[in-house]
Amino acid sequence: MKKQHSSFIVHPSSFASGFTLIEIMLVVVIILIVTGIAVPKLSGSFSSTRMKDAVRSTVRIARYARSMAILEQADCTLSFATNHISLTTAGNTNNISTNSSSSANSVLAQRRLPDEIEITDFENRTDEDMEGNNVLFYSSGMNDGFELTLEDDNDRSYTITCNPITGKITVEE
Image (cartoon, rainbow, N blue to C red; front, side):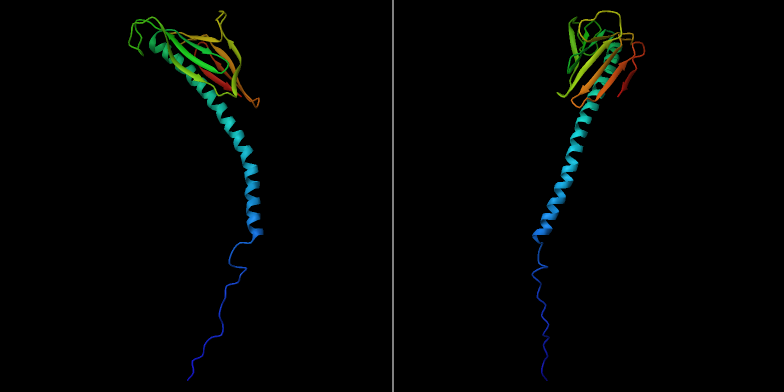
């Protein structure tokens, strides 16, 4: 008997062996469209995050100033510049943080705001004429009280208010 061989030989089609140029271009165009939509939204999100971080930092340093004034039993001064915040305390004989009897002022904390965020408005709540944008925190837990406005390049602004008696800090957009 003769063996029968199948005459069907399957050859892969030249069209099914890879991607066409049109398919590759279509994928590239879709990626470019998605990137064009996502990048502006993400850049706005980053500036918003920087603004919220600056507000949180300002609130934290004000709360820290009140806490340190009570703990150290010494007056602390919170100074606000255009894009810089610093906290100093007058030394006394019971200085807890430095364990020294020095009477010199010491810097407890400093915070630089991002370049696109600045303090545009500052109001001290006391009748006293303080030099510059300074707020005094007393050892009793009270302070001079303040209201300041942080603003960024996109005209977003937050107003931070500190109650002089309770030290409670509120933030308004």
